[in-house]
Amino acid sequence: MRLGVLDMIGLAASLVFALPLANYAVVRLFAGEVALGAGLLVVAAAMVVLPQYFLDPARVLRRLISGLLPRQLRSDDAPAAEESESDSPER
Image (cartoon, rainbow, N blue to C red; front, top):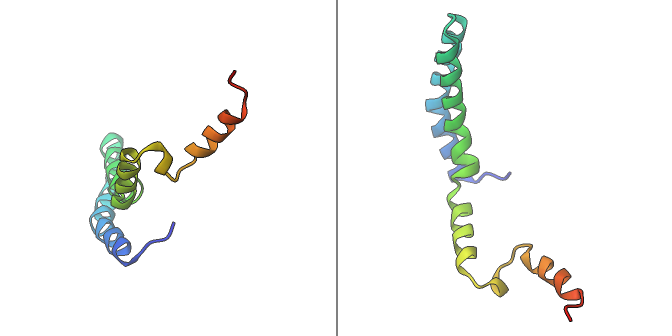
């Protein structure tokens, strides 16, 4: 995965908030509060993973535009599947 300058800045901003939370979660885990520590670790990981993989604005915009385009103008793997179906005899 290639990251541009703005992506790196966004990742650094996420890490600024996620690392102290993860540190506190590890301290809580060693203190014996397993549920709180594990929950905070999940939140810290989600703070970094969600924006990078699921909430990527370019990916969301591409999916939205490709969903609005007619099937003939889409550039995904759907035309390849249609070609294989058209090769089979229909009549």
